[in-house]
Image (cartoon, rainbow, N blue to C red; front, side):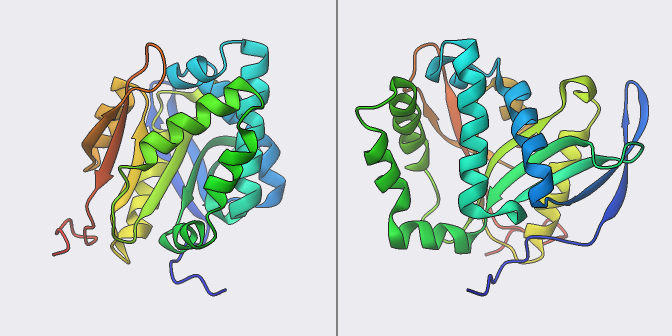
Length: 232
């Protein structure tokens, strides 16, 4: 299959300025060697996420489930569906990651219905898997009807959080998307993440509350050209 949507670019050095000074990072497309670090990073980053806490109340099990979910998703989509921010001063250390699906990937999802098949397989098994599948289905109902990108997760290592690495990952991916404009869909699980995405042109299209004490936001960024003009 030829993917019509460019997912990667050559290595680019970025200076990310934060409270601790300037951190030099390389934002690149992940390789298989990066994925164990990415799954550990997501487990660290999402341990206190309200949706993950509701899906898996046990912290020990939650960490295992988050890692397994990351590895499962990347295994299906390929490591080139992950952008990583690498520490410029420590070879190979992953400081942040962003996972996504292109419109082509989503077309294949619809054609073969693998999401629904896998949701059927987890029914009657672990309660966490069932809760997670129910929540994800409720969020996914609000995706655009037209071809679009789906940004799944953005996370940074706790020791560099708040220094702009997540924003750098988001800017880089959106710039690549805007070269071949298409809408972008994502879920924000906190008010803070919602506000961040709003700064990058996303708007809330629905509020989703399928789990106790949680409120997620389904958000869409309309297709725009690189100069900021909306695609008609």
